[in-house]
Image 1 (cartoon, one colour):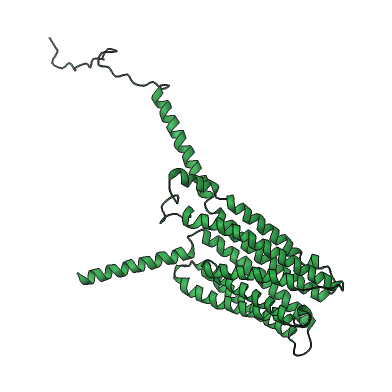
Image 2 (cartoon, one colour):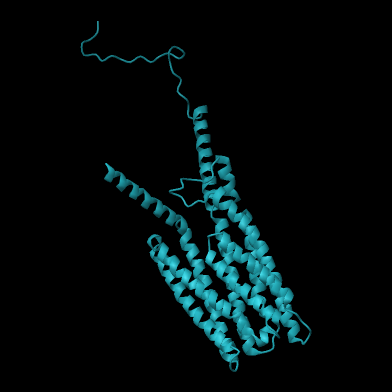
Length: 362
């Protein structure tokens, strides 16, 4: 007989008769869980490494453009110093260009392979972009990354042609310094070819279009005019190299003002400040080039000291503008591209407008 207050005792099932075997601590299932966790962790590390390489091609291309601008601004400074000092070796005067062009070529070649990890991860996942396009800054390998690599290849050809043109120009100036016979035609033809390539790039591609268009057109007009004037263009008509650059600087100033006005609503506070400072420096560059044009003008005596000071000031301002462009690229890399922000803003505006029209119709 059972006691009325006795609690029922649960019976332990025998082994093999309706009993479920619990996995031991060192069993097979915990090991599978550990392996799966390790695989997911390694995949996360690979994805994060791919995310870090996603923007390297874009950054290297921006760095190459900035180095190109810094080296040619430094060339203008050394040319002005040589004008003030007198006789010096032209190969040493062009040293900033030799170093800058070499560094540009290195950066352009590295940009071809800088985002290979990101491309490999995208191909493994069968996606054109890692992450959601609305929440990530990763580029699409089809519409952004591969075109950037192709442009880097064309950029290498452009820098090589510019280097050949500058070597021929330096040889022309060196032969004139030693009193030997010389001709500007080979160097001018290469500069015209480089100018045409830059102008076509600015016309066909929207990114930095005004920079390539105005500078390419200015260089094209300068060396075309140099082939047409009689005598030595660098001695008798040096002002023809300054006047087109003055017009190019004015065009860059106008385009910078219009670009700021168009993109002001999507820019951060620092980006707006940087663009305003860039416009002030472009105004200073206009003043320096105007003074240089006056010092080299054919009407009246040449003012060598004024030309040297104005050229050095213009070179310093070009280097500062290139440094500002570098800071703009760093700030922009923290967010999406400005043109993408403008597209998103226009799309949201159209969507809100469509919604208002629908509500009015209802």
